[in-house]
Length: 307
Image (tube, rainbow, N blue to C red; front, side, top):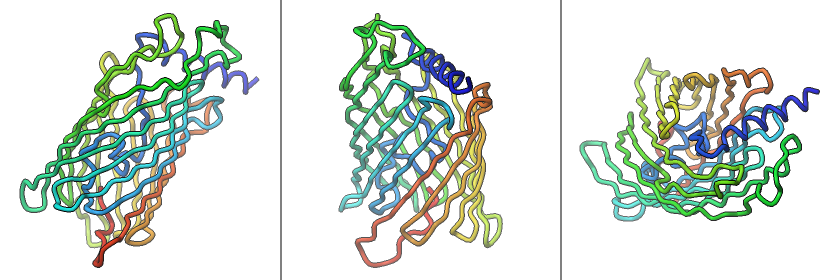
């Protein structure tokens, strides 16, 4: 009975998000967005002045059949000459009967705006392969000939601005500018991609010799949908251990932690619970992150990286 209740809830949710004309959050969201900025803003590429790799796996609403899950792999590095940087993202996202596999390449042009500050202009381009099979939902009666999309290619491009210093950053971006049509009007799936805008910022301040405080925010905007605001408060203990809490306005709250294993390797974890009625039917959301800075030259790597 509980299993069926979960399936019914997810099915209803999926249909709501997928209904033609609904402008819900289509791009994946992350609790540890401040360590996964390249997924939202191509201008972030090369900002750490080192070749970096980051892998993240997010499993949302554990206990739900068909609950969303997202896996991300991102790479970025400055190029010789200090002006240009390259990056890339591979994203696998599943939510009920819908699956998306994306590959995007990023290029950033960086200029110095003062002592220790840089402004970067970023462009991204790539393709998202979308598929959906609502006929696989046992609780929904649909015409199988008009309820599936198989591997539809949705090319897109985006832009971003990222201004940063060692202790603060501000960014704005629209990672997907094209509003691609996904399915026919009669198809019971999302019939269009919608443009998402992101505004983000963060700051690091000293509390004492061993403790730093880093507040950060991310604001998401989609036309026709309510604004989504994430507020995070993290502390850094002895330049090695991050710990803190997050709140997504009207949606979720949670905690997170990160351990800087050495100058190159860091491991992070986040857990959050939804504040909506769906919270009674799942065991929360888990997110695991692994980051590595490759060291190809002599000298010390900047450790820890604040952003």
